[in-house]
Image 1: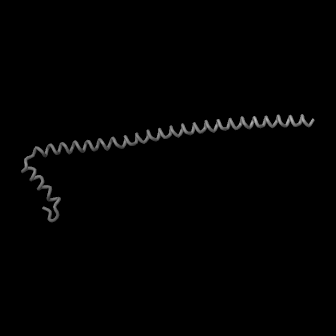
Image 2: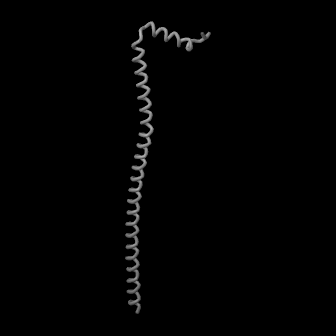
Length: 107
């Protein structure tokens, strides 16, 4: 009876060890899968954030570029108008506006 009991104890011990090994392997596989899933989600989120940042930058830059373009066009038109004026006319225009710039008595 003693060796029967010992054989049963050893059998139960092997079964417990097998279950422990199976549980460990299953746990490691789950951890590995969760880790991969987490890394994939992080990469997806980074990609989404980068795309959102690019869109926000484009939405900000476009109006600024349009405004700068309009300012340049207006300045070009004014420069073209002024380039057609003779020196005497330009001098009169400058003298009219210089009064506002110079310190002292206003005319």
